[in-house]
Image 1 (cartoon, rainbow over the protein chains, first blue to last red):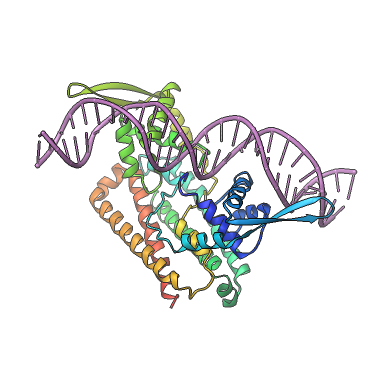
Image 2 (cartoon, each protein chain N blue to C red):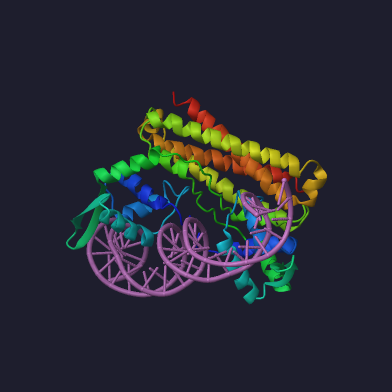
Length: 180
Length: 180
DNA sequence: CGAAACATGTAAGAAGTTACATGATTAC
DNA sequence: GTAATCATGTAACTTCTTACATGTTTCG
C-alpha cells in the first residue's frame, strides 16, 4: 500500500467532478467509494496541501456564518492532465486482497473444527448485511437507466461491489453447508 | 493497513505448521497466500525478531554447508495460544478492497469513453490468466479429496480465490459486452 | 567457474492509523 | 442551550515498500 500514492489520484478524481472541501472528501470515502478505498481526514488534509503545492489543485476560502473558513479545492489543468494520464495508464498488477477472515481460514486444520461453524455464521451475517445495504443503495441512487448513464463510473463500481458481495456470500453458504 | 499487525498472526500461523526460516516464510507469501497477503523479507525478519523477544516464537541455528547459518523459527506455547485466540476472535469488519482498476472506473464519465474498451480488455486478460493459474494450482495441489481434507485451510482459500476470480471475470465480460 | 537461488540483515522514507487539539454552525 | 455535525489542522506512531548491503550454496 505504501507505494503508489493512489490517494493522490483519488483526490484528483473526486475534485474533477466539482470543487470540494477536505471534509466533503472524507465523507465520500465513507460512502460512495468506501468499498474500494478509505482515508482519514488526517491523511486527506496534508495530501491536499501537497497537491496544492504541486499546482495540481487550487483552493479558495469561503466564509460560512461569520467566522468559519471552508477551504474549497478544485482541479487545475495540470491536475486534470495527471488524472487523465493515470486513468489511461495500464493497470497490470493485482494487489493482494487483505481479507482477515480468509487468512484465519488458512490456519484451520480440519473441516470438523468446532470453531469453523461460528466463524462462517458470523461472516454470512456480515456479508448478507453488506449485500442488502449495497442493493438498497443501488435502487436509491440508480432508479432508472438515466441515472446510470449520467454517473456511469459510480454505477459500475456499485454494480461491481454487489456482484462481489453476492459471490462471496454464495461461497460462504456453499462451504458452510459442507462443514457438517 | 497500518493497524492490527496481522503480519504477526500470519507468521505465527505459518510457524504453527512447522518450523521455518524467514526465507521460507517469504516464499509462502509469494505462493500459497499471496492472493490474500504479501510481505517482504525486510518486514518479516524484524517481525520474527520481535516475536522472539515476546517469547511467541523461538529459534535455533542450523549450519548448512560449512558456514551458512539458517535460522529456524518455531512456535512456543505462548505463540500457539495467541494464534488460537486470534483465529477464534470475531472478525466483524470488512476492509476496503483496494482495487486500482475499479477506482479508475469510478472516474470514467460516460459509457462510450474510448479508453474504457482497452481498460476492460487488459483486465479481462489479467483476470483470465489469474483464474487459469489458480485452477492449475488447484488441480496440482488437491488432486483428490484426501489432500483437501489433509490441508483444509489451504483448500478453502484456494477455492475462495478461484470463485472470486471467476466472478470478477464474469463481471468484466458482462460489462464489456455492454459498452458497445 | 559462473549464474541462479538461498539466506539474513539494515536504512530511509512513504503511507496509513489513532489520538490530540480546537472551534463554528445547525437543528432541536 | 446543548448536542450533533461541520470543519480544519497537527503529532506520534505503526506498517509497508524500496533500496542498500553482504555472503553462501547449488546446479549446470
